[in-house]
Amino acid sequence: MLSHLLAPLLHLAAWQVYLIVGGLAFGEAAVLLGFVVPGETAVILGGVASRVGHAHLAVVVVVAVLAAVVGDSVGYEVGRVLGARLLDLRAIHRRRAPFDAARSFLERYGARAVFVGRFTAFLRAVVPGLAGMSNLSYRRFLLANASGGVIWGAGYAVLGYGIGTAYQRLEHYSTIGSSVLLVVVVAAAVALRLRERRRQQAAAPRRLPEPAVEAEPSASTR
Image 1 (cartoon, helix red, strand yellow):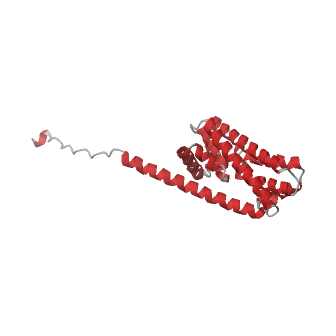
Image 2 (cartoon, rainbow, N blue to C red; image 1 turned 45 degrees about the vertical axis):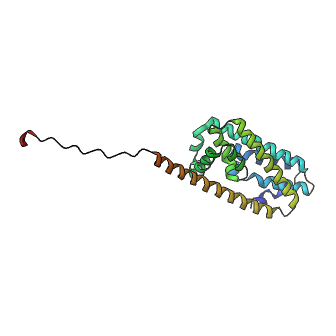
Image 3 (cartoon, helix red, strand yellow; image 1 turned 60 degrees about the vertical axis):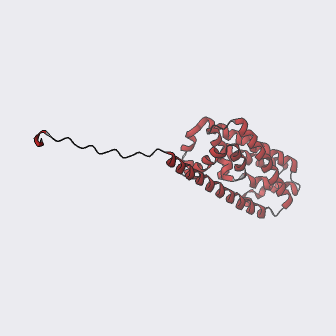
């Protein structure tokens, strides 16, 4: 359980709590750290640390939101600069199917996909980079990114504060919810891709068979 690895966060000084919460929230999309440590775990524990008096809840919220928004912006820029080369990385190439589904989801829904992706660990790590590779403008990306970041950062910090030391139960439910949302998104993206392919096949002109050309009789048979 990640909460066991991050549990020492509850015994650190306030500035150390803010540093860890901000670093993990920032690194999810900026350096694809979300594949290893989901940022919401750190934000939940930051809320718990506020509950037991090791930090201030308002500061945890501000740090989590700003770090999430800035980290996603860095991820967007990385995707814009590296482009398709980002998808050729070995770690990404091995999981190409989920990436293709996330890309289809983004192409279909644009900024709405950025907002929804904020609440799933995998999408939170990859959507900013994919958005940078797409034709989604940074202005639209930033609006969706900031909206999702505010709800995500404040929501998980407040939940962590409210649940107190029973944070392991909250982490369990948040992981289940995130996984369910990811399955729904991937299934929807695959269904949309299949429907688009069928539509293209139906719209493609059918090639009529060419009439057989009778061979002219040779001189020897005339």
